[in-house]
Amino acid sequence: MASSISSYFITFITIFQLLCTCTLSTNGCYTSIISFGDSLTDTGNLKQLFDDANEQPLHFFYPPYGQTFFHSPTGRCSNGRLIIDFIAESIRLPLVRPFVGTKGRNMMALRQGVNYAVAGSTALDSSFHEARGVPNSMTNSSLGVQLGWFKQSVPSLCANVPDCKHFIGHSLILMGEIGGNDYNHALVAGKSTDELVTYVPLVVEVIISAVSELIELGAKTLVVPGNLPIGCSPVYLTLYYGSDNMEYDNSTGCITQLNNFSEYHNELLKIELSKVRENHPEVDLIYADYYNAAMQLFRSPNEYGFINGALKACCGGGGPFNYNTSIPCAHSSSSVCVQPDTYVNWDGFHLTEAAYKVIFQSVFQGPYTIPDFNSLCPASVIQEIDGISIST
Image (cartoon, rainbow, N blue to C red; front, side, top):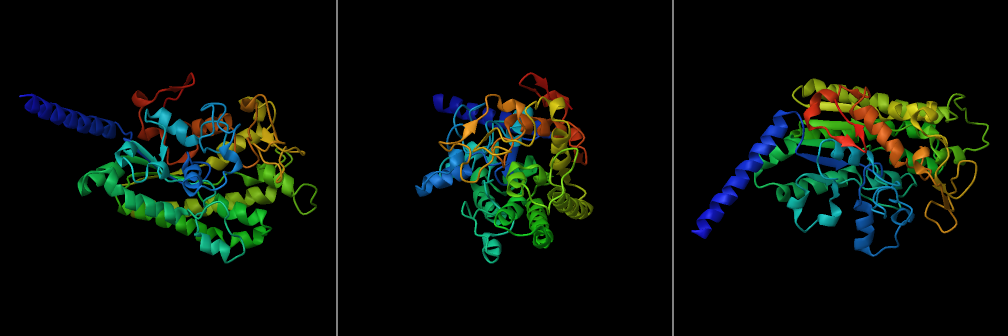
């Protein structure tokens, strides 16, 4: 008798879960988040890869990383949450867990969200950059590697082929940002923007190929972010400080040539995404304009509460922009600001939680998506984040 009751109970729970999934789907929201990308999205994969290999941890695996929200380092390259965390909170899903830490264990624990992004990753394979004298000392987990992890893990995330199609089709798939490090690593190594211009069609081609492959696997909603305005980064403002070869935007203080380069990447990406939309009208393929969402902060930092400015890092080793390649954030000689939420930049490369929150709000509840993301997720399933209503 007990066995029969148990069987009925399990059947009821299974039916209830299926009904919940269908309800969420028909409401226009998602039962899971699947993510790829680099440090803008990584929630702990690189940290786990270093732990598994028993390698010397990188500086962003130490405090003060994570201090604002998690109160300890998680592998996120910020003082707190990233855009992906705000997305998950806004649609009432758990924070998206890193894939690497769960690999080989209970994969079904990732059913509501799985993150394949790895800090330092490039879109193009590492061999491309190595052939050009720019080896990636952080990771070889390019977009192709991440996509391979996804395809290998899908059978463990769902019961059968129809279930896998349903799982992928009802997931919000976040494609990065990815591609920024193809340019960052090369620029830091001394490559010119003229040479990097030749990379852009190849980087975009890899991103589009991954998008197309995910669509073939059943993806129905994909968000593809563009690159941030790298000319506003303390890394490059420090690297080119005093150079007569650089022009600066008087309204922001950002390096014009580098921002123009980011815009070139983004324009080409938008063109190629429009072609995919034409071939797949049944798919919601969304361009997320991180560039212009972020430029609001650089043009009017005080308006958004960033009273300590947009170009100086909160955590770093000194200098005009508080960035020093020899003294990174978390180094024993580095310093950290008292109020990170009044700074746009966290450590020279990455932004603060407060900046990521504004970008999230501007993109996922504002005007910075093509087409409009707001129409895909109704207000009834949106919740407040830190007292701010995230409604559509």
